[in-house]
Length: 119
Image (cartoon, rainbow, N blue to C red; front, side, top):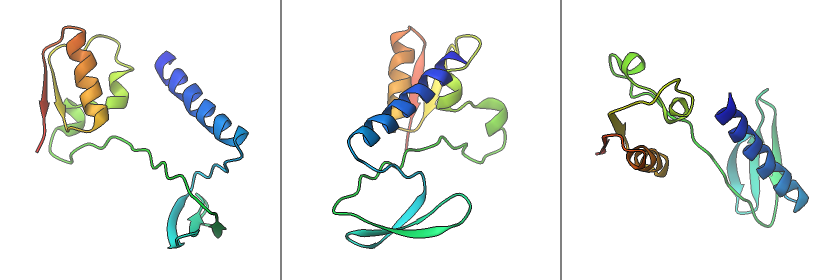
């Protein structure tokens, strides 16, 4: 509840700030047609072209399970970490993205035995 609500409020604030600065916010799949045109596709599959002098690309990201036996039974995502009913204790963080390193850093800062594994 609380953490996810806070994240949702941050995202709403970002969209509001963009709009107040005359930035059009589109939550759509897009690809460049030329340096000043993108083809956008909404969730319903409707495509349209958008032209602009400049584009801000904020792709975001979602955590993914590695697709190995036991991954969903033995692992949690970075999103899940913020909704645990109790402290995770000893933790292996897989990956070295900024999110992974931030999670590892705050877990270590809280005193938990934390290891980062990366390629």
